[in-house]
Amino acid sequence: MTQLLTEQPIKPAVRAWTRLLRAYALTTRQLSAELQEEHGLTINDFEALLVLSNAEGGRLKRVDLARNLLLTPSGITRLLRGLEDAGLVERASCASDLRVTYAQITDAGRDKLETASNAHIASICALLEEHFAGDELDAIAEILGKLPGVAEGDESCSPG
Amino acid sequence: MTQLLTEQPIKPAVRAWTRLLRAYALTTRQLSAELQEEHGLTINDFEALLVLSNAEGGRLKRVDLARNLLLTPSGITRLLRGLEDAGLVERASCASDLRVTYAQITDAGRDKLETASNAHIASICALLEEHFAGDELDAIAEILGKLPGVAEGDESCSPG
DNA sequence: CATTATTCCTTGATGACGCAACTTTTGACC
DNA sequence: GGTCAAAAGTTGCGTCATCAAGGAATAATG
Image (cartoon, rainbow over all chains, first blue to last red):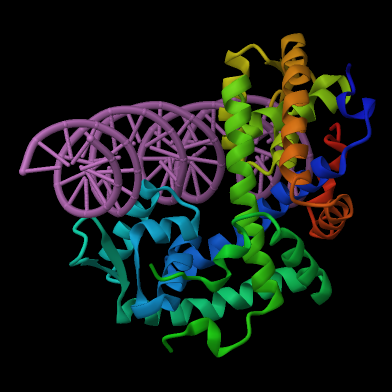
């Protein structure tokens, strides 16, 4: 009982899960720090701008944005408050349904995204391509895409 | 400029990175919730108990535990405070170096780990094996292990 | 030795996020 | 139309983790 994991062979699922955890933690820390330092954006800030910029009309219902970013509604409220305060996103109301509020990317938001994305994408590539081959990256993306909800964000928008 | 990502093909690295993000978020939410609800443990609580149980003598310097769990020293302090309050981990001082404090898993901690790990491992397998084939899991683990720092935790300890 | 750098650990302040509770608006059903 | 369920969004509160700063012990250097 002192050696818990040696009683039984480590299952592939557990091994994969553990490595996913660590890979996420390691890569996120670095990418997040760079994005924050150079552009004052969180990863989710960036992703939100990206999703909005690709959405039809540059806007999306807050609830759809939440689904896309895998955040709760309250998370979206706070995320967007920051972006609104920075002038990167605006609120727009919906005429046909008073409950919904749209998040609308501004010109400043597009500029910010344009600037930040070059550096961010370069960072991602630098970080990953340093250790992974191209076909390995494809393989990871392919396999992880089988988890429901993972590949759905690929369009980076689904105008509602 | 309105369609940022369609100007250029999505790079494999970016695609892989995005999916890694989402896969992490999706799996973690569910596994974390189960672990918390059924055993009152955070994922990091669990991992800490696991690492300690496999360490020589069931104890590890706090700084080594921090490296292993990819947490900062302050994170470890707060994590261990919870485990100490719950009686699952004890402090032990080091005779030869008064700076270091060991984290020592208790019998209660081992019992807790024993109980929780069965359910937790089952949850991991259920979640992942539902969507991934065995060789896909192996492939993920294999590839992600190439990132420095990811595979190093496999021994779940490195007694200092 | 004396001084300075380094290591280990803790604490205070802060930020991001989830959950639960709530308001407002809409839609469904009688 | 009236009632009741569902959905959008906000807020209060709690949790977890970071960074920055500091205290104490040790190592390195003159």
